[in-house]
Length: 168
Image (cartoon, rainbow, N blue to C red; front, side, top):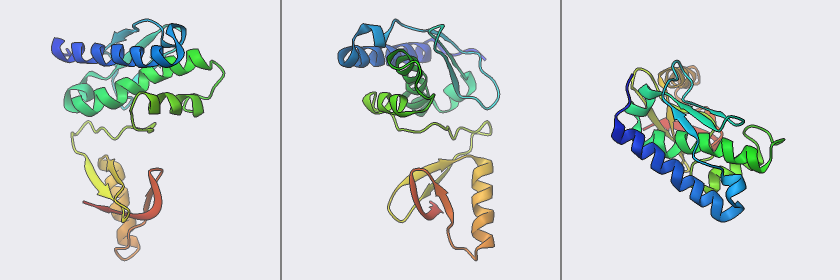
């Protein structure tokens, strides 16, 4: 699948913005140079960062379907891997260094995406107002769980562990 040149430009501008933010905080050694970006992923993986090659691979179908969220979350997430590795090469892949990088770059501290190849995303919200998105399979499992518990919500996610999530 070919990615529109305007979307590629938006991706590049987002990565350049991330580089500038990291450079201001930790210097150019941690920020690094513009990574090579390829649009060739398939399957369920939304993005992949090759830390030692300074390369990011992105999923063109998810990028096209979920452009704004994909660029603000997944592209930033993959760049955060590159910068976190340069800051702390022995740190856990989604550890404290990575999470602090995500916070610095203004992205949600999530490690999973909720993109669906079917293009359907279900929004859920807990009693505390914390919202999340579920793909088709997760949504069906959550509804099944609610049905098994006489309609009581029981779906818990990392965002809020209150077990009161309901479909919106």
